[in-house]
Image (tube, rainbow, N blue to C red; front, top):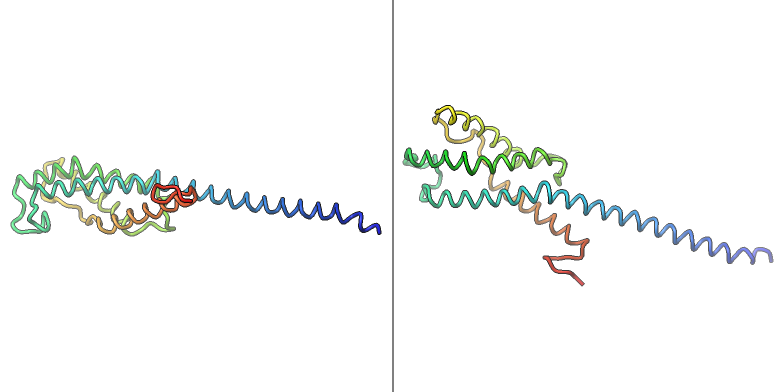
Length: 190
């Protein structure tokens, strides 16, 4: 008979323990979600958002430049006839004042925020972008010294791969960001 008086307190203790364990596990899950959302926010704010915006600005500037200068040519420098002196001067102006500042911004974003990459290793397209910008610095230094024998970087700008990678990464992170907030395409879900 004595064991019957222990049933109610034992059940109460068991229910309390199960409740405590469930709350503890739920708190861990919520903290992990919060940490994941914080990381996504950091990735978008410091890496993928600035990369996406700067790449889109560079694309728009490039299309504007090419619509005015040698629009009928497939390649600015590798098409016949070669650029005129005025076209070469326009190239140098646009590279120096428009494209190189955008390229330097892209380089800085990548180098300073590489810890926020989605992947464990640096994507090849971003490595090539940084190499392109670095190699162009020598070309611009020659221009400063009046040497116009070279007009392009030794490493081609991997624009297609960069654009594909940055846009896909940005969009995927935006979707991941929206999911825990109950948002989808800017609208609240039921």
